[in-house]
Image (cartoon, rainbow over all chains, first blue to last red; front, side, top):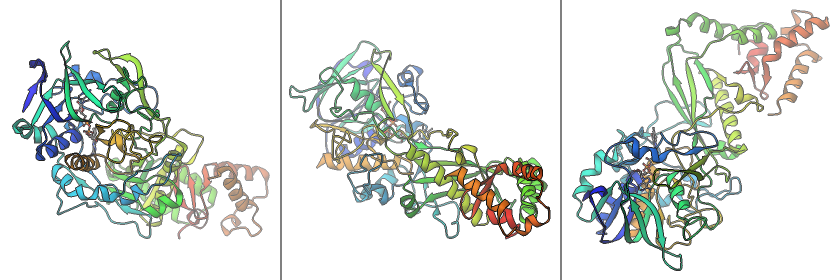
Length: 478
Length: 70
Ligand SMILES: Cc1cc2nc3c(=O)[nH]c(=O)nc-3n(C[C@H](O)[C@H](O)[C@H](O)COP(=O)(O)OP(=O)(O)OC[C@H]3O[C@@H](n4cnc5c(N)ncnc54)[C@H](O)[C@@H]3O)c2cc1C
């Protein structure tokens, strides 16, 4: 059943499970738990469509590297799946090999905990399970960079695909225009007693359930927990000051440009560094994309480029050759971009701003920082790839100045993947949730979404989010 | 990559090698001024490792720079 909370006065029922947020995590959990006969309440802060009024609640105070936190999320039914791009790639089993990075442990679970949910997650995301994950290009020869295999979702819009099913489900009560604003804990502060919700006006209600799951995304989940500070001054689940820390993105670095030796080649390529390379260098994982921007012919440089390859291959004095190459101001046929693993680091974080939203609740203060480990990942990966490209006889790569000169700041962007802010760890000193996604010290509060990622690998997050949500649903329906 | 050291070693190798590579044999480098000019033109060159160098960001096998076709 689907209700507009604006039209509702109270919520009297007591539910088995209260799910907050209707993105891929929340909707997956609601559907799966409903199958096990649980009585579910599913809450959504926004309406059924986009509105400026709702989206404005996502405004943040950004003090570090900017990742456009207001625009990379959507605050209405279906969440950010209303504009995601649909690229899907599973984690590797090596993503779960638990070694410490920046003093922080990795995942407390193994890949085998997620693998059983792969097929079901693929169905949910309309991926062709028979076809599996496929690469768009061939191998570099004798290289550590393999073609990256992925699968493309249409992309699945969770509202369009699942709203009617939720509407029809007898044991799901879903309310939109219902913003979760606070948690009321029991006297011992060991479990959540009630969740407080409001619409955009004065209307408030409380929701009672046995268990509560927060599925608000990687920025809003820590913001919510930190704002629940009436009974616990530093926020709920934050006894060790870990809520909001270790914000991770996937690093999108404009590494440079390239020219294929074969000027008629217009194929894009995507490579993934193998485990041996990553562990030998002690760096993060990487996906590198070579995307054609313009055919050499189409900007009238065929002759200049042919001349370039001819001249660098012939005997010439080294000074002349260096001069000749420096004078070759070709923009390249295509650009190199990346999806690189960012390591968890405590200084990269979501905390509370002094600014408040229209409900008087503190906004998120967003401070995205990368570490020296990440800088090493960027530079070592780019250089190795450029060498392999040349060795394979494909052509030449020109790396941006910051790739070679450590005194220049690295340019990088984001992928709208918000991870790590309620990270999973068996040890509360290093994380917010345990291996079952339950908040440490609170008996009935869970988190789903990429905020629980202990490390982010170099894969797109949504399919693992769905796998982890299915796993949590299994755990809670047992 | 200890860039400054690599670069210095590489340039020293080119200019002061006991056996002059054939590529330098064509032009005598006796005058200090011509050496300085040549060194200036080599400013855009950086050695990456045993096999690769970069020229103005282009990553190329060093063999290509010193010998031409490989
Ligand atoms: C442009 C773009 C392209 C992307 N492309 C890809 C891609 O190709 N592949 C990929 O894997 N990922 C991609 N992503 C990321 C993907 O969209 C997210 O991983 C995914 O949507 C996260 O799902 P979620 O359910 O955890 O959070 P969300 O989808 O963000 O859902 C959170 C929900 O919580 C609701 N909410 C927030 N606060 C409250 C509150 N206080 N009370 C009640 N409800 C609340 C929100 O309205 C929303 O419905 C992309 C993202 C963007 C922006």
